Length: 243
Image 1 (cartoon, rainbow, N blue to C red):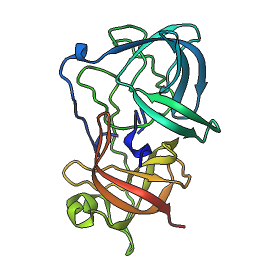
Image 2 (cartoon, rainbow, N blue to C red):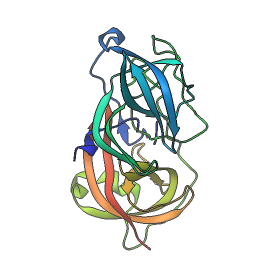
Image 3 (cartoon, rainbow, N blue to C red):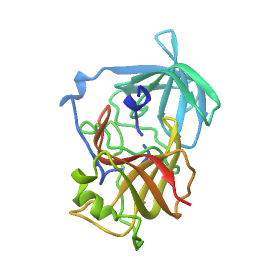
Image 4 (tube, rainbow, N blue to C red):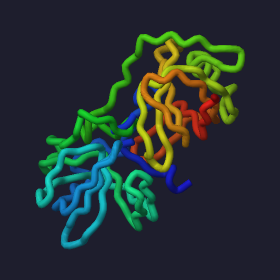
């Protein structure tokens, strides 16, 4: 459960199913951290940085970022994760700090992201431009539910009825971010829409690819708050791909 208290930036993956919230209205209320990068490790969804901050060595995980060794960068609002395992790196960090963004300037207006690659998506605490808020585009898909599945529109329309139950959804994978918080994250669309809600986020241990049409069974969870501004109105957890 402690892992589920993280995030980040989660750059990768949402917004139609995510709500942004803020704990501060003034940028000056959030401390600015200054660090010199000593080592950079890139994976599919994160940039891991070993930094020197006030003569203390620590590890930071940020959305995919183009940073240089021996250069100085800035960040805000870190969330510490202890005993965190990165499956992609094949290593465990005794302590690592997840941050929303890395900036080349102290005013946090020069975020050094790498937009050419996917990153975790969630709604960031972004009233002070802490990072680029991801936008979910409605895809031109038309996946018909069968007798064993419900549509995304039905899920949103009757979300209270489905809360804490397991359902099956059939749709097309429109975004995929592997190995974040020890699970794979995906976005699913089927072409249906309920009051502007057309995209569903799900987590799974199974591997998929963007463009796959899948049936996934998982537990419906409402108002899921991972902290640090990552809030999901609906998320499908513990997903299993039905063959």
